[in-house]
Length: 212
Image (cartoon, rainbow, N blue to C red; front, side, top):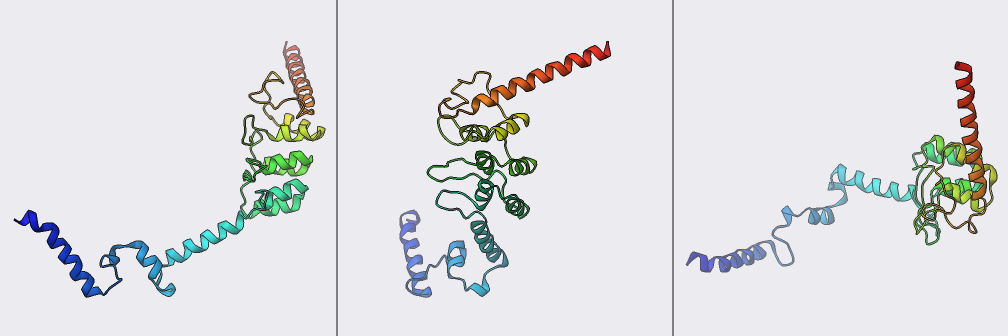
């Protein structure tokens, strides 16, 4: 008999609780975090709640983007504004911040600095830990080297290769490189890579000769 009437008794308890607390009130509200956070007066909220609210607001302002999905660091890098780039990095912006605009998915500040051929900004970004081989989203992700090659920024291409940017052995390897007609300056990158390899071999031979 107790088993049969248990659901009925539970219903009576809930109804009685509703009568005690009044219509529209949740009798289980003391155990509900969401109820407290919504209905508690601002002055009674815990310091943790207030600090979390401020943190969310700060992060939104820090990573506010334009209609291209660029942060202020992306914009500064594209303009070649070294002073602004340093300021933003010193304030804690992510050197590898990713843009998520419709036409710039995965772009980092280094992509944009390379595209503009801004060597000083590129150097600063790399010193601060920028990923030299960061790839955009797509069938064949573009690296900063590809961005520089597309815009025929020869000095930027040379700079990136000298600093260890990745290149597959075959220039036509579509897994890692875009088609050459999209990225004509890529030939310079391979010329530079061959030059560096030749210098490395030559220096090794000279070292062996001097030791013998």
